[in-house]
Image 1: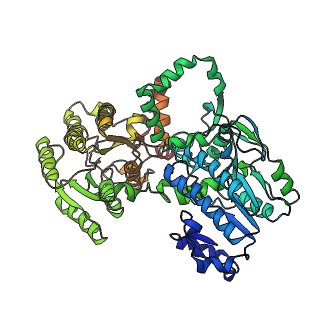
Image 2: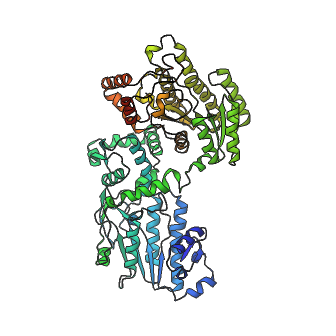
Image 3: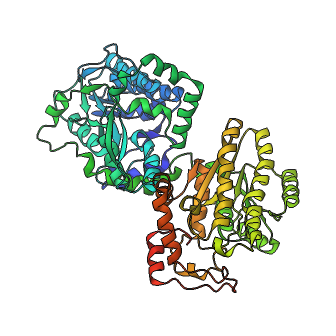
Length: 630
């Protein structure tokens, strides 16, 4: 077995997985080097002694750099063929791909190769060039295998990288988080695709390789019944417990539209920028789109004949989609296994966090420091800020402390001046805030409640944002995460002062994010559900309410820094916002009923803040509508 020199851990795992590890001999080499980088002392003992040579190395990721694809896939194949010829192997087996068909229309058979088909990407061109090398330069008997889009193991879900349909999983998870399963979706039918699990490909390749009389042929290792993209979407949507496509719009319906106008619109800078922005928001590389659908049908008669009687066949996607999803969520989601991890997003970057002395801010600072970021801690309480810094330092991290009062605009100005004199700020987290639970009917003589909410939650946050935005603009990059509230979406009673201040911050963010996008500055608004922190402690009613922890809220903030989505929130918040848009009168009646269900807090009535415990009906509503402040 030959493997890359830089994959020692992978090689050891392969050996450990074998029942007879002594039967495995490892040769470390590099497919990009002549004869795969092997010396005479390694090659000479193998001359005339190798029956099967399997060449599986390639760069098949659509997002790989063209020069890397050429080096590994094309040059690597030429080097492998040269070694196979030198060794005089009995059979050379080359793993190609149905990508050789490019944009061919009609039927593409196993005997077909170059039919003048269009090749839409460097990857497609490399696959064709590599197969041509095998056909023209391989002196020893050869066989070629062309799998379609390969996903994880149908039994375990295991896969070692994010590629192909996996690039859409993050968007599916976001959709499942925002909308319940029963919401019907409408979307385009993009055409046919073809997906096979890796265990089928391995078993089929092994079986065909050991059949006699099949040299000089190519074999399509494909699903005999290609799938519609909508069927694949629905299979994975069900696995994610998200909504599925109920109405599918055939893209051929667009043929009735003026093609010249569509082409012109597609070339407009604003449309192209919007398309790129949407794909970036969904974490879908544009290069992937060209390789997920096929314009032809693949005839696999030769492979079917070779596999007849073996019991090796492609299982239905529905039978293993949940296993693929589960493995992705456990091992590859959120940048695990890829360069786009939280550490990659934060290492060495400075993150200014307001309200960092306790609760969400403190938990966020600890997680950011653990990922290699440098938190800049801001709050009014120096002693508790120092405690947070000491905890970070004890874990091997670095943090800096600054005392400021965000309700005082002069204090905010002084804070920014001191911070920028000592640091560059890459990320701002506007987390500090205050809240009050009091109905409008009891607020006639307490206008200062509204002023205090606006001072911290709105004016302090936007002054800090504006001052740091100038600094970020000069550097050409920056990100701002604003911690808003689910209450903005749900319009929860007794929170008119708090919700209005957060809604103002949301509106400000929507405006300036459009203005500053071209300067490299991005914004995320998190509509946070109820979090169990010291801020809600005075409302005793909430002791029996479901709430997320500060650590879970910090995970959301860290994810906003890693992915930089426009908004984040809960499924309930999205439904509440949509409901108010569609039926505001009905929502008003429901909110009034909830208002009458929940008691006024002792603070709201001028007491000492002990509050009333949740009555049975109120408790049931709170459990059903989890995350909302009532």
